[in-house]
Image (cartoon, rainbow, N blue to C red; front, side, top):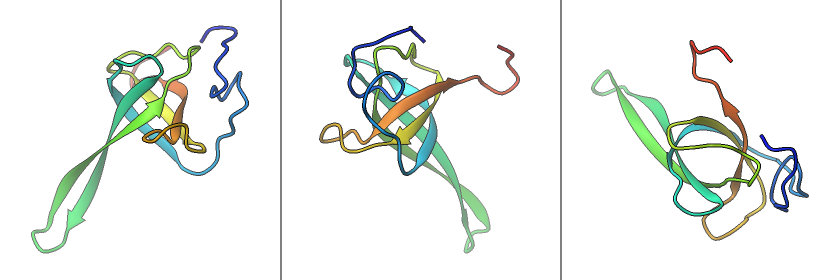
Length: 102
């Protein structure tokens, strides 16, 4: 993480507060300047078939300037007020994958 950033929607350096849900997902797209798309997987049990179904959710999240994330990273996001039409979550921190040391 950089020392400073001028983004008002940064949870560390800006004025935005985190409240509500916390999500964890994998970054699948990062083409626009301050937006990343994350993918979350959920396992749901179907009693009729006695099997599990994998459900995939995708969300657009705000990526502050000071966060150094790229496609394939696991990130943790927190809910904020609406930043734009599609963004209501902001990246809080980058997670290390299980089994990998810092």
